[in-house]
Length: 255
Ligand code: NAP
Image (cartoon, rainbow, N blue to C red; front, side, top):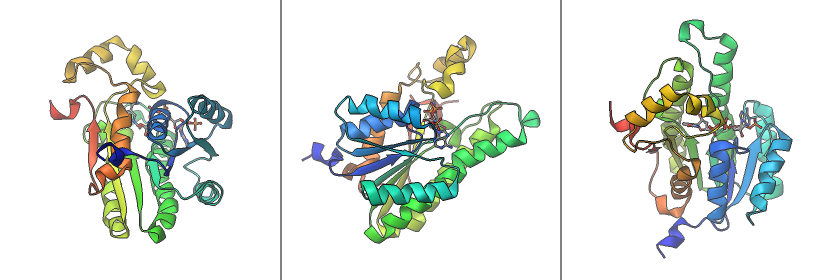
């Protein structure tokens, strides 16, 4: 009984930006918990390769190629999933990018890329999915936030602004859609080893500072995010709404 609370058997989950990194690890975790998982990304070849890897592990995987910053493409992509694959029970808004430069030198095009990918997309995809979830009276939405939803760092002000915005959008979505039976929560990852953080992992000064600053004294491994996602996607969290769960080795607790 207790463990069945965490089962995702019979559910369909869409995870944006899931051809690599955190999204891919979450896809594997939700699929291992029983969900049929729809992978998403812009690069069809990369997405197929990721899907093949997971199918090779006997997991049930579908693919949906669309750019989350392109609102008409999002509407079309969500409509196709609902029509051809099935009702989306779980949405994970994960696609995101980072651009680093001191704010006074920050390029306007990079600013727009960060905002369009990290925050506009969450509005487009969630609105399109919620239009189907609301009449069904149920649904789970998980927004991938960051420790930078709370804390800044030099040269990443636009990223931190976008992640702070996702935190508040999570609360707003919870307030507007909670009465329709939808739960909207966030996961705030600390520092995890992925392609997005590759340069930081290789930077010994940064890595030494980070591990010294993190109470758990290490980087996170992406597999360590799966438990939080399964919890928030399953019946185990049936009365949890509008919450941000930080999975960060404790970094947000200390100065
Ligand atoms: P990543 O390794 O760079 O992967 C990003 C994924 O998003 C790729 O699959 C990419 O595939 C997809 N993507 C990017 N732009 C897209 C778009 N416009 N439309 C559709 N898909 C798109 O990133 P990550 O490190 O796993 O990060 C994933 C999320 O976690 C992000 O929201 C990030 O901010 C957050 N996060 C990461 C860390 C960390 O330590 N890594 C910490 C806190 C929060 P395509 O290239 O095919 O589009």
